[in-house]
Amino acid sequence: MLPDTINTGISVLEYTHIQLDLVRWVNQCALLKRYFHARDVLVIQTTSQGNEIIVTPPDGSSQCYTAGTLLAANNPIMRQIQQQFPHANPVRYAAPQLTQETDVTPNQEAIPLIVRPLIWPDGEHFGFLCVLQPEINDDTGMTAEMIEPFQLLLQQDLSLLCQSHRIEALSMREAKTGMLNHYGFIMMAPRQLSLGRRFGANAGVMMFELLPSDNISDRHHALLGNLLQSAVRAADIVAHDSPQQFIVLAFVYAESDLNIMLSRIKRQLDALEEGLALNCASHYFQPGSQTRLTDVMAEVKQQLSSHPLRHKPIATLAKQG
Image (cartoon, rainbow, N blue to C red):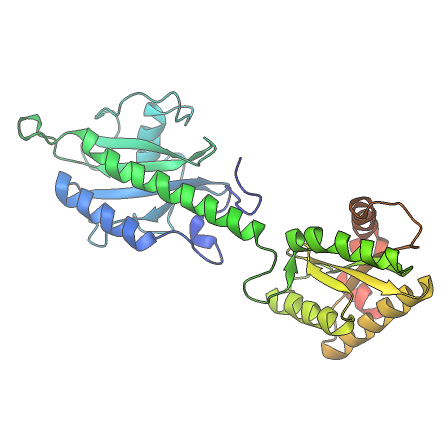
């Protein structure tokens, strides 16, 4: 199973922090191109937008096949690939064979094409490794199987990418901000809550999110995170629960204190930057409550998602704030 932070429908070129050694991929493409005296070598990823070229050799002879190019389903290369792998199922694929069934360009004769499927570590389809117009010479031992080392390297890099995401998920703090992440909150908040209950402290869980808008960026989420960190006391815990949501475990004297904190944070955010619409929800419980923290978090998230302000235009929200 892939980590939750990996979206297979998004091109690896669109990742905020590319954790793949794409330079090495480019160099390997260049080596394959020279080895096979090929016209071009393509690493293609299948995304929600289509089949996108991830890397090509720096000296590729195909001007129209560059990194970031989307190949339409009726593209000659994709038609030929689909004939070899109609279901794009890496488990079923047969040994690669050179085909002469489809033209790569409308005005050219059919050319040989070596294709190998690429998969994510969980077996899900990633894309294809293609060598266009290779010169195969069995007498010299130059065979299609020589593509396998690069195929294995690509598979290993995808496995390392998933492993890196899993390690980051197990990390309790974000690398950039030092703020607790979801895993850090799950690990630390129950112990802090248990300690507070032992001393008879009332507590509350609050969640915050900025309502969607075309103007919202990572800078605004960082602004909200910094505001929450400065608003809580030493015994309280604030965490970045998801890309858009923050969660706070706060110890208070009474339930009214939670409402005061929510109002104060809204005013401070509006003072820092006008026009930001803040959606928030809270849950209060006393020391004798046996309610589990995970249940409280689920309830607060439900409040957040069902809040009526979440579905109003951003201009209306700004006026109501």
